[in-house]
Image 1 (cartoon, rainbow, N blue to C red):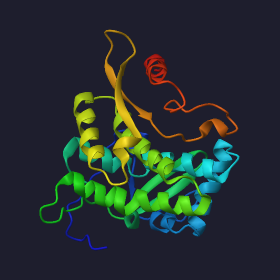
Image 2 (tube, helix red, strand yellow; image 1 turned 90 degrees about the vertical axis):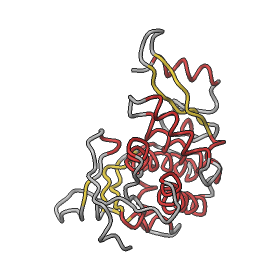
Image 3 (cartoon, rainbow, N blue to C red; image 1 turned 120 degrees about the horizontal axis):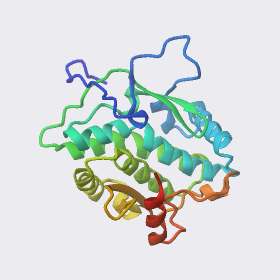
Image 4 (tube, rainbow, N blue to C red; image 1 turned 45 degrees about the vertical axis):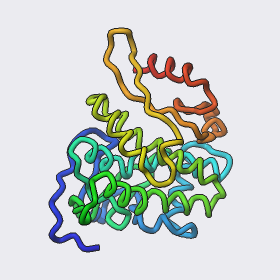
Length: 253
C-alpha cells in the first residue's frame, strides 16, 4: 500500500470510541494485536479470536448471534475515527484494513492502531464521501461482514445492519454538532454500498422539552442480543416499537 506522500493525519482526542494509536505495538503490550486485513478470511485464526472474545464477553449461545454483535461493535469502534473525521472535516483518514491493527476485549475492541497515520488522497473526480465508502465500506467493513456470514451463516442483511449501526453510532455518540452530523449521516447512507440506507434511521431526541437534542440510531435489523446471557434487548432493537425506543433514549443520560 503506497502512502509515503500522503498527508499526515493527527488523530484527535474526541473520546474513547474514536481513539487510535499509531505504529506497531511494543513487544510488552498486553493482549494480541490482530491484522485487520486477515479478518476478511472466514478461516483466519484472527477472526476466530475476535469471535471467541465476543462470545465470552456477551454470552451469546450461537455463532451467528455472536457474529451480529461483533459486526456492530467492530464498525462502531475500529473505523469510527474515519467516519467522524470525514463528517467534521471532509477528509478521510486511512483506516483501510491493511493499515489497521485491532486488539480484542471482552464484548468490544480494546484498541485500534494504524501503521501510518495519514489521510487518503481521492482519485481524480472522487468526492470525499465516495472515498470514505471505498476505504471504510468496500475495503474494510463489508469484507469482514462477508467473512462472518461465510463463517457463521449469520444473515447478510443483519450483518450489514450492524455495519450501519456502528457507522451511525460513530456520529451519534459525538454529542454535539447535531445538525451537521444528521446531514452527514444522510449523505453517507443515501449512496452507501450494501444498502445501508434502508437498514435503520438516525433520529433526534431530547431528555427534556427544553434540553439539548442528540442523535440516536434505530435499527431495522435485529442483532439478536436478547439471546445472549444478559437476555436484554439492545437500546436500538428493531423488536421494540419506534416511539418506545425514542422515549427510552430520551430518558437515558
